[in-house]
Image (tube, rainbow, N blue to C red; front, side):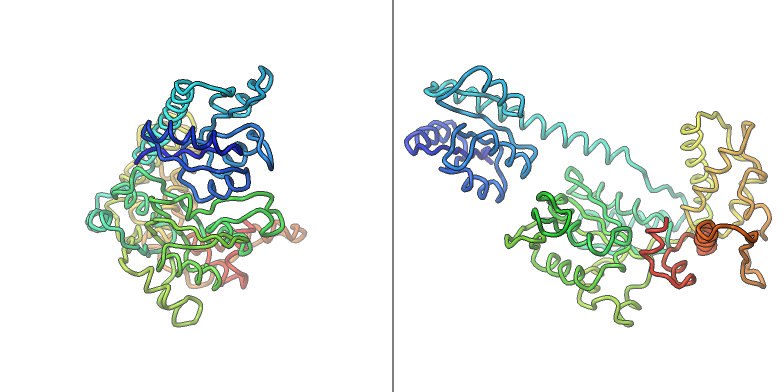
Length: 448
């Protein structure tokens, strides 16, 4: 597609003259006579370059350039004026203009300035694309050698090439986010953004604005216009974790996006369209949530086009050793240690444990062991106390776990200890921990 240029000037004759030159050079050109008209056109998106007069009937070119950058940080700008002087030119360049032309300028000057500005814009966009691709190829990988892991990755490779919505299910800590990474990395959208949102970690009042964006003044604290995660994920992938925690209002809006690919930012009447491949994840059974009236049935069917279940670590015993070695290398490097490996006795205990907290619990166990060891090898005594002292089969105790605190312990410390111990007992499952403590899941996130 030809680069799109927006020309803004109150002199109709100059606008038409510039348009003829640029169209003859092969560019797509739109015209505006005022700053307000230009801002409205810029909000529709798709422009690579802004060519604007310095003096406009309702503002100036530098202010218009700042508004254009607020709408699209990638856009380049050339400022033209009949009142040019050196300080003004320097000010325009300092504020981000690529070039500064003084009327009357020659056709060759305009063509050369536009060509160079667009080349800068193209190179900057290509640089961002390459950095994004590099970060995605070098990002965390799903590690697994077991039959369960191989079957999972076979399914991932099969579904990645499609554009269908994927629902990832499985216990907390199994690696659903890494599976979402793999789906994106293997998909045709790999060169575009992968945007992630933990729905449970965001306050209810901000979640809708975070997903769909907002206009200035849409709510208290909205001091400027902001694009939401759907707009940022255009032509890429959006990963919604803990999707079961979405409020009814957000569920309705999400359903519309999945149906029409369109939404309205908070405080706006404009409709935004986004081409997004959605991957959602939940550690609770959404069918049960639907039956109990906590999740919309129509949204569930929209999300449940393809379901991929990530198996718990206790069903991937063959993966414990390679995962443990991976975390050992990771945390040894972070802590500046040189470790040879894990002793046979310690590895045997790791493989006997049932890992209620799954891969996340294993990661934390190895991180602790790396910190605690003073020799070249992780031994049994370096593992967390629960792994050293509990029965290998991790059978349930006859009595419920007890948290003991001395009289006089501040209530804040008691609360912190109780929440942490409950999370440990539930393997990091925040919904179960919240249920046991009689509080909302969002309260768990806020306390953490």
